[in-house]
Every structure is written in C-alpha cells, then in structure tokens.
Image 1 (spheres, one colour):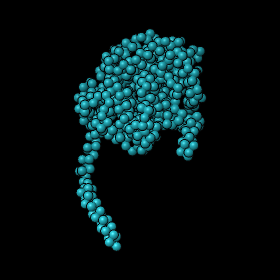
Image 2 (cartoon, one colour):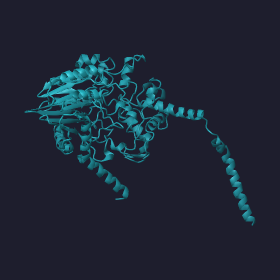
Image 3 (cartoon, helix red, strand yellow):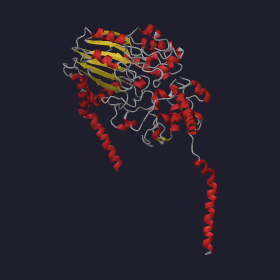
Image 4 (cartoon, helix red, strand yellow):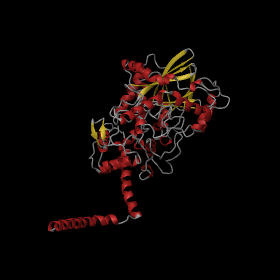
Length: 150
Length: 399
C-alpha cells in the first residue's frame, strides 16, 4: 500500500516537473500571432529569397557583400536553371550521379559552383548558401515532395 | 519485380507506345489542321509527321557512327535539302554566346570546333546560316571574336541577330560586321528568308535611365521580366515578308530562319514572337514552309497550320524545357550531364523531297539522343516540378 502511494507520488511529482519545464515554452506558443508578426516573418524569408535570386543570377555586388565567388566562367546558375527549373529541390536528398554519392541540395549547389561554373565552393552553412537554398525552394514551392527520385 | 516496379514499367511502356504510335499525334495534327487550314485549301501531305521522323532514332545510329568516324562533334546543325534534281546541304550554327576569351574558353573552343567542322564538310556546304546570339553581352570584343572565328569559314555566310548581340549598342556593331536583316535569296528551288525577331523590344530602359550595360544585362537574362515581351517580327517586317513572298508559287518550299520560334511556346522566356499570329496569317497561303530557329537551345518540333518549326541546338549550353507549352509533337531530348560541356548540343539534318515534305534528323555526339523513358527525358523528369516566376527582378536593385 505504502509502495503504491509512493509510486503515485512519484508520478505526480514527475508530471509537475514536466509542467514546470513546459510552461515557459507553452506560454510562447499560446500567444496568437498578429498579422504584423506574420508579415515580419515573411519579410525575413523573402529577403533571403531576394538575395538568393541575385546570387543565382550572377549579381556581382551581392557576391561581394556575402564574400563568395560563385563563377569564374561568366556562367550564372540561372543560365542553366531559369526560374530555378531543373534544380529539383523536392528530390533531395538522393543519390547524385555526378558525385557518385548520396547528396543533399546544398552539396549539389556546391558541385555546380565548382564544376560548370568553376567558382569557389561555399560553406554549406553560410548566409550565401542559405539564401541560394531559399530562392531555389521558393521558386519550386508547390512541387510534390519526392526525395530520392532520380 | 514488385508492384511499384511493375507499375513503373507499365508507365514507361505506355509512354513508349504513345511516342511510337502516331494515333495521338495524328489526332492533334488533325485538330490543328481543322482549326487553322483555310477553307478551299487541300490538306497538305507534308504536314504529317513522317515515318522517318519516328524512325530517326534508328537512322541516328548510322549517322552517329559516321559522325564519329569523321570526327564530327555535336556542335553544328547541318541541313540537307533536295528539291527537284539537285541536292545540296548547308550548315547552321547559333547561340555560341561568346564571352571575351579570357573569361570563358569553353564557349570559344566549341565555336571554333563547329566552324572547323563546317569547313571540313564533304561535300562542302553551300552556305552557312548563323542564327544569332554570337555574343553573350553584345560587347564589341565578343562580336569581333565571333567574327574572327567565323572568318575561318570560306563558304558564303548569312547572319540573323540574337538579342544578346544587340542591346548594348542597339545593333551598331552587329550591323557593321554582319549586315542588316531581313534578307531573302533563292537557292536551287527554295526561297530562303532571314528575319530579325529581336530588335523590336518595347523601350524598358529610357524611363528608368538604364545604362547600355544595364539594358543589355536585363536582355541577357532569360528569366528576367524587365525586358518584357521583346521578341517580335514587327509590322514593317511583316509587310516586307508579305511582299517578298508575293511572287513565289504557293506550293514551292520556303525556309524561314529566325532567332526565336515563330509560335507561342513559352512567352516568359520569349520562346515565341509576340506577333506570331500575324506571321501565320502572312504564311497561311503557302503549303510548304519550314521555320528553323535558335534561342531555345533544345530539340523542338512543332506544326501549326502549314508551318512546321524546328528548334536547333546551341553550341554553348542547353536550356531546360519550359515548364509548360512544349509542343506535343516534340519528342524530348535526353537529360544532359551538366558536368560535360559537350553534352546536350548537337546537329541536325533536314531533307526536303520534291517539295512534298521535310525529313529531319537530330544527331548528337552521344549514344542516346531522344528520351525513351520519362525519367531520362528533359520533360518527363519534371512531372513533380511546379515553378514560380522570380520576384527579385521586380525589386531593388532591378526596379
């Protein structure tokens, strides 16, 4: 009987502990978003899309600002991928034939920079990579998610 | 084989049957013909997709073997015409997109190679058509480089401009080096016409006080909306075309060269001319018209009314197929290897027989040219792709 009571006290204590831990986060989620907040979130995202678009189209000033050199041949990403077509972000990760390995979109972006463009590989977590990724995903939004597809 | 594989295989077989079986194509052709053929004009047998067109994959094998033996590379398009008793060939090169030598050597190498191969043709080509986009940014240095490369060719050369050649100095250097368009000439029973489809852009630069380089940069970006619907034949040239054809028998072959396709394929990339309907009105009485065009950098075939259109390959790089509007009569080319600068470019061969029909073959310096399975097709691999036009070209710093 005493053991059972101790068990239930333990369960109760555990629940209280979890509740205490969850409160700060739970409260944050209970706050409803205002249209102004949603707009701000979208603006942050679209600014990255805009930067990515400029990089994707070979804008030298944006490259300079972000400290990257995506091409040495005059080729820009958009010259083979107008509207970011044929980039297939919805198919990654997948086995990428050119690399002969299982690859992410970011790795494929670097492959294109280094090979057809003969540019300089960029840090996979750099602002330039995130912007390129944002532009490619945004341009392909609504595409059917189909990872692994060749 | 599991169920997924079986379904996939069945899908491929269906696609192959669809390509091999002319039933659907014939139906499309009949529909277009019914809509567009004027009353009183007899159906034209040349409108049919010929058996040879469907067989060209097998023809290709021999052609590729020959090409390999003679060192042909997929850099030029040769067109062979036979009309009456005479047979002759001519070559087509376009879309070299040259940068200055120090910026990009690959494009230069491919242009040089194409020219050497045209020069080596046996029997020699009667003439060369250069189909536009010699330069990438219209720079006189680029155009002069192209001129020097093309000077190696001793046969007669005819030129039509591309938008990349024009919008830095509004065609001044181009016309100085290569003359004006439009033009026409008759050769062995065929009337050849060259059109300028690129110089009629609406003025998108004056109000925004763009520098010539800025104007050129927008024009040189295929998916930019800033230059708008720039591709057109224009009223003046339409009148010229009408006048030029007025003395030509309606059933004799006419071959029209243009940089852009003379129909509506995909306007956002100017894969069209905006006044294509007016062009078709002028050409409507003629029963044997072939339009050979560049700009699209891909295998493309279409028929509308009495006009058949053949898209030629570039020497520089292949464009992807547009997200919509690919003519159903086009059998797509294979997906290319982006790591191989020589992939996805090629040459074509056309034969006009007694003015009855045009047989054509696409040939590339690779094992497979046309896709037979959807996952290897330049169109079929995009079934899950949905694209949106850009935003940044409507924002700072472009606007």
